[in-house]
Amino acid sequence: MIFVYIGMGLSLLASSLVKSTFAKYDRVRSQRGISGREAAEIILQKNGIGYVQVLSVRGHLSDFYSPKDKTVNLSEATENSSSIAAIGVAAHECGHAVQDAVGYMPLVISRNINPVCAICSQLAIPIIFIGFLIGLSGFIQLGIIVFAVAISFQIITLPVEWNASQRAMRILEEEGILSPQEIKGVRAVLTAAALTYVAAAASSVLQLLRLLILYGGRGRRDD
Image (cartoon, rainbow, N blue to C red):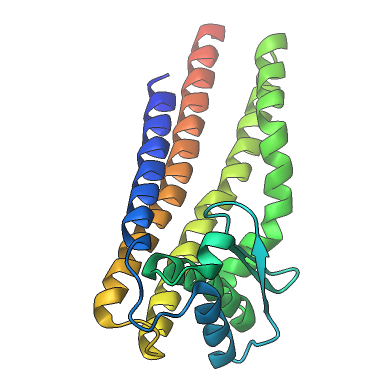
């Protein structure tokens, strides 16, 4: 269970960090006074992807880019705020739109394997549980393999998120949307956000290791 506790600790720590970092820089207004929506529209136009729409969604930090609908979806706080935190988050989602427009390969791969990984994530634990319940090692092995496939999406997501953040900061600076000093704040916000993905992936890998250890122990007892 130590792996489970470590994973939970990493996730809680990362979540706390991103909330506190966002709150800190959400109190810092941008020098130009533009909102997250305005920043997003500037970035999309400058990169020749004005066909991507900027829409509003409910929630806090619920922002996302939809490659299927070609929309950058911003939460109300991000859309209407002129803080450097909000502008950074909006720019990050536009970074995904730019990735999509240029055919960034990790994004293409993650988008294609996502449906398979989503199914695997739902099936893995039930298969493993049945395997332990009826004592079939083949079922347990299959469940572990299915679980490994499921977490591959989280691992592939890491370079996608990192690259989107790098694109966001570069565009914000090149277009003069934020000053170099303000970019430092954006970097802090986006780095904290990236750590949530790292923590989630690490937690899943630790869970996989736990399953492998449990299966290994069962295998030795069966021998």
